[in-house]
Image (cartoon, rainbow, N blue to C red; front, side, top):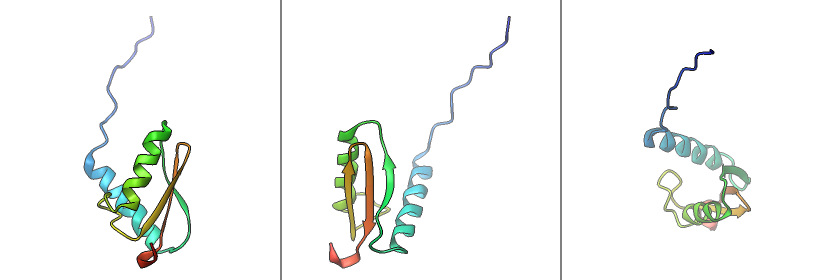
Length: 84
């Protein structure tokens, strides 16, 4: 009989997610006006909600000055500064 090693995957911590979003926001700020895919999800509703949160400045790492749209399960965003 083959042996199997059982182990749960490591949980993604809030700190890891925050660092990822901060890095993404910093890159977008360095490329104002350019659209980028910032998130992929399995549900269109979740993508629309996340895009809305970015636009409203509710994703702390992004803050204000970003535009975001959801296309099916993909979220695109760009930094526009005070133009939004």
